[in-house]
Length: 327
Ligand SMILES: NC(=O)c1ccc[n+]([C@@H]2O[C@H](COP(=O)([O-])OP(=O)(O)OC[C@H]3O[C@@H](n4cnc5c(N)ncnc54)[C@H](OP(=O)(O)O)[C@@H]3O)[C@@H](O)[C@H]2O)c1
Image (tube, rainbow, N blue to C red; front, side):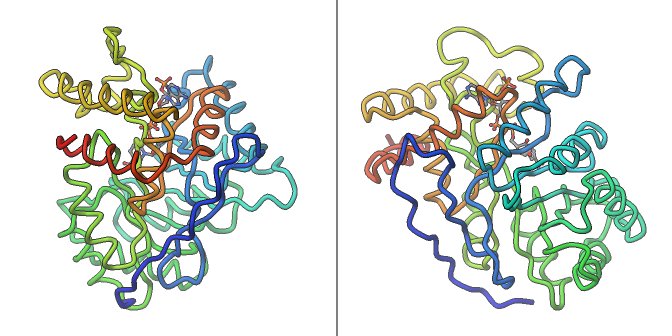
């Protein structure tokens, strides 16, 4: 197992609202000598996989490639393989010289060794790649021991079929067990829900990951639009959005979540920056790599524009306090 190593982030690039590409500084990817991109586009449910919306999803992926998004995240389970296929098709036409960091995941239902190998073969086929940069266990299966799963990922890493080993939705106990099962391959990534509106469990996991050289990829970083200012003024989130993030929109919890989001919006207005900039750069300052969703090219462009504007440290400190209920 790789020893714990301190992680250092490169200083973010100066805000440049007019530059074409988002800042590209990355996070050291423990034990690999490589860097993990600072931000990425996730391809979970942008088009909700209806035929009507799929064309928009494709446009969004192509636009992301044009704009230099450095990392794409998908999973075998997203759209039952359609997400990986759309991404694979788009990658064929990507601009020359534009390197792309790719993460995909083996589903929680496929964690036995033979299933993992079959799942990876199918994912790589859909993506049209010989390997992926990080292959993640989508979530632990409490009914299976993690040892054989991690040993299989390590074997795939040694065979060069995956660039590195990662996990998702692992708590500290799960992470300890996963690392114990690896002999040579470092565990480099844990992808978890983490945002200014969802950090209670994430803070503990982040602390462990920081100490052990594991990059935290923060998913649902925009709180399904709340951190873009949606659903804050009386218009209730539609049922499909509530279904995609049950904990955020839980009937009992939502008033508190919305009050926090409103306080963050007031802070952003006072600071003269978009709320999205506060949401994304707070995550970056926590040392995590946000993986956001965007259903349309317009949403994508707005998020990337916000990423180019880095709020001052004092603003991010106040956002941190507000999100802890101390603001
Ligand atoms: N490992 C896991 O278990 C796991 C779980 C969840 C997510 N993820 C990963 O994380 C990625 C992102 O997660 P997510 O989609 O749940 O979260 P998110 O980034 O918090 O939310 C994305 C949604 O926010 C809204 N949005 C985006 N840009 C906007 C803008 N400029 N203005 C207004 N609204 C905007 C859109 O909602 P509408 O579509 O409603 O317009 C979009 O679909 C996924 O694609 C996936 O790769 C992983």
